[in-house]
Image (cartoon, rainbow, N blue to C red; front, side, top):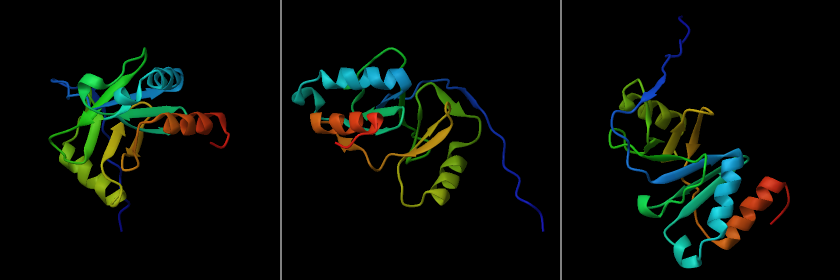
Length: 148
């Protein structure tokens, strides 16, 4: 019986950027993005959704309403593999349909998925919530280790 050998792959620059549908921020940039989102009116927040983890904040929406802060990166769904979101400027050097099928086997009920290069992670996007002042308070509590 032979052991499974993982396939090695790398990220490369994308020839054509993907249309941005998400702003992704880590660390200090995530906190700056949180501050920027907190300044938006409820009308400006409508149409945006967000999710957070320690040191991470991701906001989705139409490209023309996604906020910008220093250090932010952008992502979007790839037309080559439905259900797979990637950075707008980078892509894996393997066929995307193969990566998407592999990820679907690992996460059969958690679609769509964001595949991110640095830090390397696969992030399910099925728990995005509509952006609101209350959600921003919950995110602050998560980051500060308190209850909201």
